[in-house]
Length: 464
Image 1 (spheres, rainbow, N blue to C red):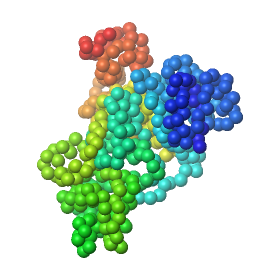
Image 2 (cartoon, rainbow, N blue to C red):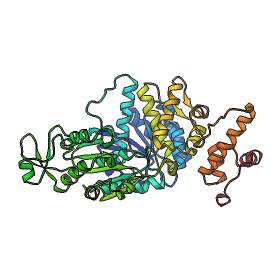
Image 3 (cartoon, helix red, strand yellow):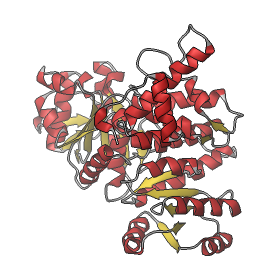
Image 4 (cartoon, rainbow, N blue to C red):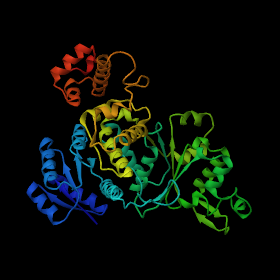
């Protein structure tokens, strides 16, 4: 069982928190002052959770612990109503940031992940074998970041779906984490760890996809006589028994494959091709789809019977630009993951860099954010951190023009950037001057002056 030292948890929440963490094999040592925390950490090294409900005072406690225990792994717990504390936690060097209500499995995953990253950095990491898209339990899963109101609604649906074995359709733009959401549901299900099998229907032609899934031709002989589908031991469907089958791009599956899948999910029984024995087919189906799915359903490219089996629960994932409060913690996660893979020390993100990333549109969503950070870190392996200039070299402020477009003097280029950057931060904070000034790291009066000089306007509805 893992142990964590939890600093500053309200007394009213401790019993429930201890229960949630205990269910994930995480034991809690409570601490309410720095001296006691340091004594406990001297006795045995363990990760630290720091509740940031006290704001700046709690961050000072984190710095005090860091002064005496530089290598201690530290995580932050924030109230979902204070997403600004997420950025402060990342800047304070927290390995990850958890929003209330605290999930035990979420904490356990993060501790395991950080220990793995440390092993990679020390050169002792192991590559995990197995087929792509196939794992047991929660191995390899990426956590959903839910500091934003939009994602808290998603997490409520994820928790509801985890209590059922019904089909789930997860809809969202490319890069929004459809498979991550499916894995989150899979990981929260009760019972023993089971396989999560992912199949991309667009990655195979019709005959090949049928073979990959079923490992056997359509029902024949006594299977047909019993009205059951035939599955082979080498098919991914059999791999998923007792677990989850996740279908990506299901609209690309041929009609005959969809028909066979629908029949199998309806009957929940099949005939094993090698022995002709009947086997129970307990598989939970999920499908990741994009915004064109409804049109495909209307056009008949998705079989109605299959849709019925998949769509008992429907989850719509918001794009990253609609959940900007999640970007600091997500960026921090990606930075630590990329640094671990490159076997370089984790880099610190500077406030201006985080502010810029939080203001950008990210039309490619989390995938685009990660790709950008990969470029930044590859280009600055020896640098201590990631600053505004590092990010600027790899991003656009809008969908078309590059931040530093060619032409004009250096002074003109700087003014263009400042104008676009301030406008983007103001949009992010809905025109609220105090919050925008804090994100930009300048005084509110200075922000007003710059806006007048650069002719930046804002929506009157956001004024205060």
